[in-house]
Image (cartoon, rainbow, N blue to C red; front, side, top):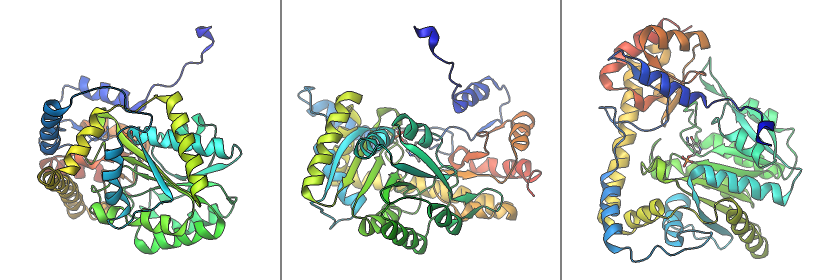
Length: 388
Ligand code: PMP
């Protein structure tokens, strides 16, 4: 039977990793894969995480099953960070998930179960896994404009014009901060417009917050999400700790649902649990337990916040350096988070790789953190040739 399977395309980013490894040039630059790197090119384990792992090793007295909702302490400690210090809400419920991807998949299946004929609206461009995940959950995917690569502009007017076709009860997937791949910053005024639209049209915001603290700051990066949740009675939030705690392969995330009343909320939670049972039974414990320990110890927490600020500042510094060196890339300094989408063609992406050893995704997405400060002049000179 297995020979009936169609061949699936290889993940283009994995192919890029292979090409980068095989490239013998010592000055090659990897801007492909989306992980933070320090100025030496490393993706280190955070000190706060290392310490919490030592504590966990010493203190953990059982590895018995937890449950489909994972580590409840972890979920509870994240809530003030995500929703605000005074944002206790009896109409919200959350579960731990395997990474942000697990949260997205669980939330999308929950929506599909609630209303099989609903559409989920996803901006163009968006993270490469959003559409496949929605499709895997059997949701109808519709697209709206979001960002123009050539002009480097956020297109809120075009977005809302496209969304005029959305039906009440459709979901709208939004990046909470540090948009992947564009880095486009959605300002408070834009969030307010989107929130008013969502409320008026009866859409369900599904906020994907995968980079909290890596764009403007922990509080600032949750501002859009909080505006939306205030405006919309029903909403979902997919959260990832994999970037802001540097836990990538440990798969640390959470999904929250906000409902209109206690009965709907209880039913939503029961469906989150029953879906999780069939997906992964329960999420992996280690990463969430580590994050719980970091967040519950004031010293570890301060250390994490400082390390997070260090990551954010390094990215912002690189953005400023690029913009200062090349005025035609000035938009990069306004953008935030790990990624930007360079205003260059696919031919430029190939030439930059072949002629200069500069590796980026085929759509010209760069991981800004892949640059070392000393690489900036060479990077900008190479890219400059291709700018309009
Ligand atoms: N959402 C976005 C926008 C992302 O960029 C990513 C990771 N690249 C995720 C979700 C998923 O993160 P995780 O590794 O926690 O599954």
